[in-house]
Image (cartoon, rainbow, N blue to C red; front, side, top):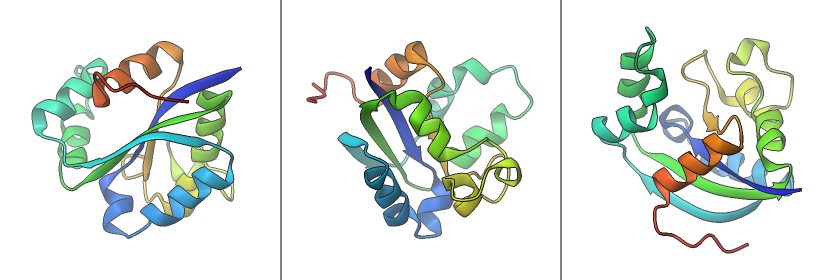
Length: 139
């Protein structure tokens, strides 16, 4: 089933000049990039995006990290896109990620793990709408 998901290349990967390699991996894995933006999140944007984690102890450091430099947000489309992207990313902790996954290759720790992806259909709808409001994502 064709799905859409949100992907983010985080500030650590952009600062390390890994965005091109990650984009290449996305395309080689068969994803279609429907929309893409380079932006620097404000604190309010980061807090809104990660609101689901507001009560967790890592919320403040996560928001601080996500606002320290530019990010690339993308709308991806593929058959089974949500799980396919999660498989390509690897687990949140790069030390636990399989060889060849983005986080294993480019992440340095559980927070600075290079990329973000939606974890389910409802989350994908919210996240795509958050970063691409009013944008018709043509497939």
